[in-house]
Image (cartoon, rainbow, N blue to C red; front, side, top):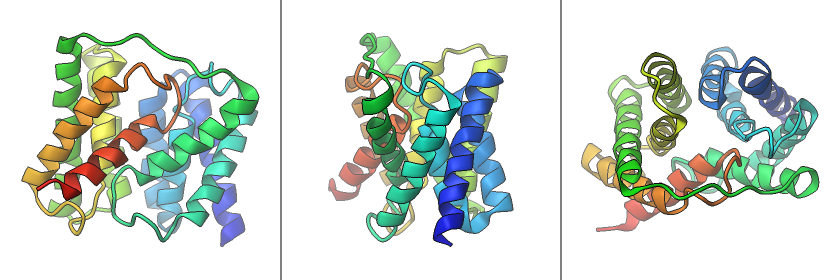
Length: 237
């Protein structure tokens, strides 16, 4: 099982990179597709596969080629194995795993890039998008009894297709919806209702806005931000 998981995460990372960079589909559509296929074809490995897809949402400046993406996927698989029994049900955990995997790889393969700050109007769009992604994913997961990976994959894929391709929005809003969807993967035991999930989405958008220039292009960052927002949202009374 361990070997199968490592092979799956390595392949998932490579496939996501190929779809995103080589075929030009972009990180959101690529990750959404890989996550969707993973949860339907390999349901027992779906979470690990989805985590590995986050690693290859990195920019080409961070992960320069498909071989490095495979290494990132392998490390993601190892970290996933070591952290299986901690932070259960907290949305964003998979992204946090991917983030640290890419961070390890980037020390050896590339520089870490920083982007420009956003305006307050752009920040308000991040908050709106993160709330939408969080609540919608949580709704699909709890209302229709769907797996968290499937619910998030559907939302991310729809956001990439509708906002990026049909409405021509830039990636910022799609990134916010995507990050929100990772928070929405939280279990009902962690986030018990829609009101609490709205609070998580609000916190997420604020954190995303404040940290936007940091670790630009690092796959998994959106998940890490989601993880922090869920952790805070769970304990705020």
